[in-house]
Length: 72
Image (cartoon, rainbow, N blue to C red; front, side, top):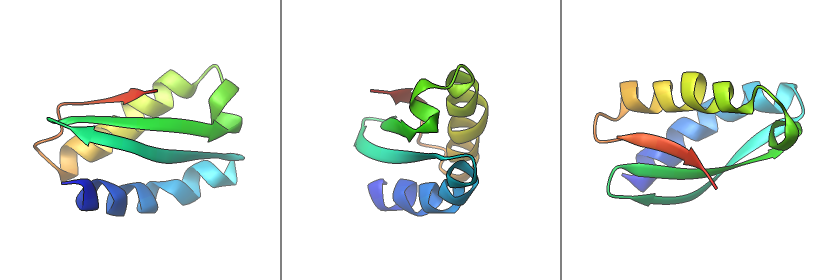
């Protein structure tokens, strides 16, 4: 599943990079995907929305085994 998550994050990454941010995969464990938001995303007040309504939503749609995405 980690390879699938990486592949999808690679598709999402350009959108984040356009705004000066990025996402880094930390770990996939038992349906929970741990990511680290970096750059402008790290301190952005909208980062929670980006994480849940963007990254998590896309990952869940593409990989049904994903239960949640959390920032670490």
